[in-house]
Image (tube, rainbow, N blue to C red; front, side, top):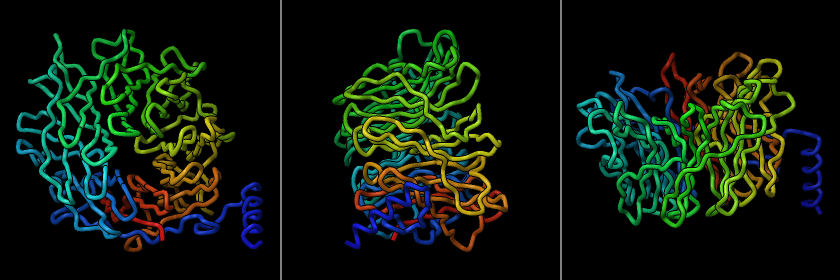
Length: 483
């Protein structure tokens, strides 16, 4: 009887909009954040970058970012949690032809199994080419990163390539996506490419085939990849057609074969020059995915849209219905990290940032329930908060099951300083928010910090990583977990 009564009371409180404290009625309780140790010689994080996290199971995670030394040189940073303990950091060892003083950019990390992970990014060589790399961790040991073999039509004189996103469906079965400079009759052009790791063997780069009518230089962007299983993935991005119109792009891999890219139709109120792009994607099963992006309306407003794939077929994108507080032009911003999560078919959660009618910047969260996208809700902020702020709002989301999710965010307090926030949802209702307690009694995450990534397991345990400001333009990283 006590449990039944508590459940009824909880439902009533949720219905009337009462915000419960963290830890109440099953909501997660976050510990005090801890410093993320940096390698010897590092003075801080480059632009607060500790931005990606992968946790294949409870107590086993990998996080990645970019640190810098006293000379301002950037280095790849790798952190591993093993059996609940974060180990000493690892500096990414770039390929042999790297020029270390030009720095390394580490974009993403993914783990197919505990202590079996992959990190991707870019580096510079002596000829000032920007090249792509893959770094593999096996049995807890990170190998030296290797240069990626680009598609056969890649430019050999001037190269600008990067691997921007990677997902490992299982150990040694991964897919990564990025862009490169292709040889053309005039200047090099920007194309997209994919590479696959099949049972531990990485393929050469495969050029993404674009829809008919693509521009001579399509300026292809592949923002993110999601894989429901090995060899079954979807990619979100954009390209430009011959009329210089930017289209939202999806690319599917089915049973290990990459298909030609598809242009996603924009919502009915889109401008003819909508500038449509998809920045984040999540797949719940093979051929069932959702992707979120932005577009311009007929009146020039920047709105958010979501496209859904059902049984291998992508839908016409639909406009995200923002909260009633949204301005006529909400100027929606999506951060492009892991800002969408689909734990099961027809059940997804996403979020971002918008401008309200008062001109304040707020975060939003939107749920898909049983195949229907709901009206978005405004990110609830702690007492005394003024707004999410232009460097705040929802950055990343994760779901332990349908309707039970968490979101990493940042917001402005009454002093105008940014703080780190995790919002939590139970049974499709966002009714708990926690301001994280930062290490070393720090008072702000600064304009470049906050909760960049959060992951929750089916057991309900969660891990988060991000950064905070220690002094003017100097940032350190933090890790945090639920108790």
